[in-house]
Image 1 (tube, rainbow, N blue to C red):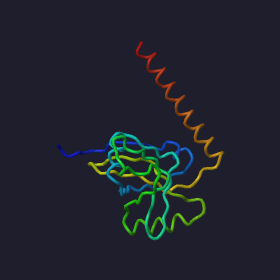
Image 2: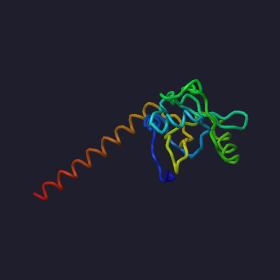
Image 3: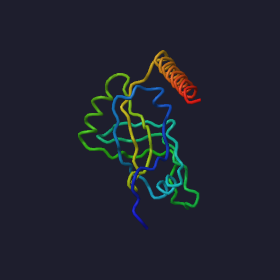
Image 4: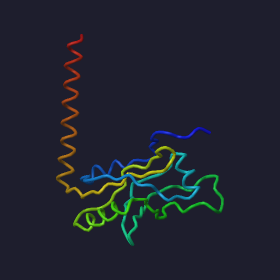
Length: 159
């Protein structure tokens, strides 16, 4: 079998970019069992309620839902177990200092395979206020309307 290359997206947390200001992102490895990897290869996972936490000098991923593998036996994993994140010591120390500041948290943004290995993109984020969310939506709408107007003008020029 040929070795896998490139990046294959499994799950993405779009709501995180709406609910948080993303300050910094980190690519982390994951400690997984065999049935978890097989379930991920089927493209099944959810990052909706997930978060990362630092304790005991280690990083842990909580509430990420990887459903049980359909052909698994009694060795199947539990769907929402906590999973260890693989980060360098310097990154963990840096994140530990940042997350102790008020309002900062670690949120998973994407789960993917990179060159055959499962990776998760974790963001250091700060929660948005309600008015920030409305402002973001307004900017997005304005951008869409501007693009529509530009494309309409270009269509008229071609005709």
